[in-house]
Length: 198
Length: 344
Image (cartoon, rainbow over all chains, first blue to last red; front, side):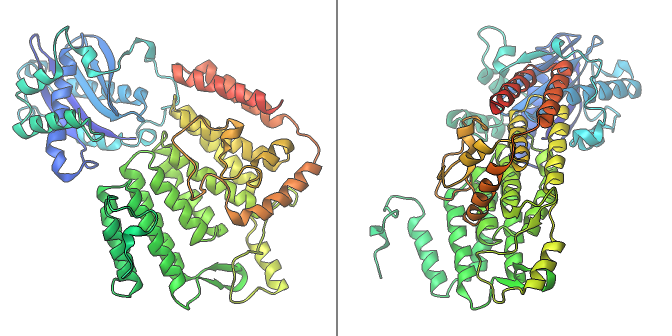
């Protein structure tokens, strides 16, 4: 039961802007870590871009689940977890983080922000605390106000894409992914490796 | 030197065969320290946590270690009865750690968990204290890996082993200190009685705790089949213990069901476990005698009360009324159906 990344983004008209992110890639082998991190950023941005304002969704990709919450004011959060991590807690976390973020960071800074310029330090602590859902959220069992039936479920990343769009193309065009990551992606796809990231 | 390639199971194309044989030769000739070899294996497992060859070789090395010296693997220790020697305990501890790490590196790592069971059977001889320690020390891990079927199967094995090693005496169960394992000194009668007093295992309490654990996890983490499957096993053990299903007990006996899993009773869905030479899904040899005694005793016991069943049905109702997870509802209903078939 793990969380791998927690990011705050702004859903701009054209693209999603990463404002702040925290990662836990300790379970990956040393050499994979930077690629994994890049892919998680890439995925988070893509998901926010393809989700509408005022929506919550869970996107399944191999053994990962990406939970996204895009608020009506375009502030968005993505948490990437494994398939054991309870989604209810993931959405509680997202709600909490975005609430806290919006109180600490001025709205004007959102559309043009970046991890270097944004002053918000809470993410690492939240990510680490929420690794154990029951410790972080003792009320897990209590039904939250959140209506789980409204959460859109996507069984693959592909279902987020437009007709004719290919994930491979998006990967190769991405500015977020380094050359090594793109190469790793190609090999992993070919092998259909059980260790493939995305 | 004998040509290892002509031995059965050592085909020339099998990867690593000649290396493995070479290592065996080196260990047997005293050139390679088995402990060092185990350490190397541990490192290999960090990269290849599933590797069957590594686990198989590991068991061979461990067997060499416990057979090799004139030092005993087991000793009598005061009123604790017969327990594994310190050296053996150290080996066991190390293996538990290696298995735990490998289990964390790959989900439902059957090879790691079945090795862990093998160690308990062959190195620890299902020593009760060790079984109890394992039950408590793996609890947190299990709660953080709620879809790890092999991890929960391990807990089922621990509970089953505890059940099969004890002889019922009312509601408190006494440990059977007569073991098939040769010891240096057999305990005198007084010591045996003292040991029995010391090592009472309150099985009903343990099983009740496991049910609570299961309830807790099912409520916190909806939609995981592993948890429901685990509940079936625990429920079955509880009520088998109380003589609820004497007919079914016969089916549980390894004599009736060689190499058996509990799948005959539809307790587990068709899963990844195939029967292997290691017999980790069945019951250990040392439990066979205890079990048939148990079987005879239970056959004489009158039929069940339905209190346990009622509670389970109430639990299912509670889950169904509050859950919003489609899978959870499905598993709850399947569990209900299973309970109904049990009482028929």
